[in-house]
Length: 421
Image (tube, rainbow, N blue to C red):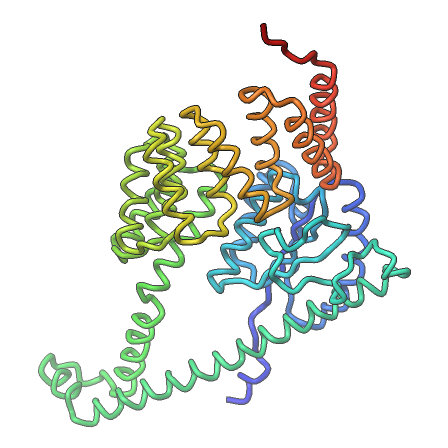
């Protein structure tokens, strides 16, 4: 069995990056350093870059993403503000949290409030915590060497785990083969063979067939089927094939009727198909199986808001907050629902709680500024919120949104105050 000590499957790496000019320059430099990984069995895929002309780059990118063991996020303000990069980021974190991939965030440029990002709790590269473009790296090559070295360590770690798994599988095969041989030694198969008059059917052949059948059952376990269907369904969701995704999740539910992820994901697909009641049923079923599943409450609350059942939406968001009092998005969503029933001050309170938890929450400042501006007629508070919002947009590199917010501030500053009789 010595061949098992050197045999490993190809490790798939996926690099996600924005298409901004600044990020592309850094990506090209990183690519030149990755040549040192060639001695290892590594298959590197770049978001968008390797798609051939005439093909759907989004579809191909997600296909590579879903089967990659290591996902490297090249993070910058442009990356965080791009819709397609945020979708890639969310999917990457789903795979990471499910233990199906390792996400490695790389700091290309300075990011304000890094800890508030979905991957802020992960170890970032370079390993001194400073972006490649910071003064801490007077020679950028040093930063890239640091990054590639850490990626190599992760690849070697996965390869070692693969070797151990291959050893375990081989041992299990040997145990199964031995068990079948013991079973055969009791003349069970010989009796069957003699009964159907097949004298040329050897005991050795029967053993091999028995092993193959048993291994087939082992490899095609329900857990593997479910994981495959969930990944396949997510891929279809990402490609906007909502009906196909719904069918995959339905099949997963038939295999595992208590799989909360399948219900939540089918709810997402049904929502996109505008089957709102079907989506609510799925989220409700997920809650019944896992009463503390915060995502199910938030998603159900969102649909109830869409259906203008604002009180029910508020109840769902409140329940989510009880489960996790630091869930920023739940406060913002509840604020939106309260705004819809004209409870403006209550909405302000929720946006303020969100800001206390996440001082750089763009949505919270934007919504709070809107309420002060349009409903409470508090010009000064509206300007304060929009000024903070403009600062955040500028840090993110969201130029158009920054300009739009500055224009809004200028219009407010020129607005004459109302005088009461």
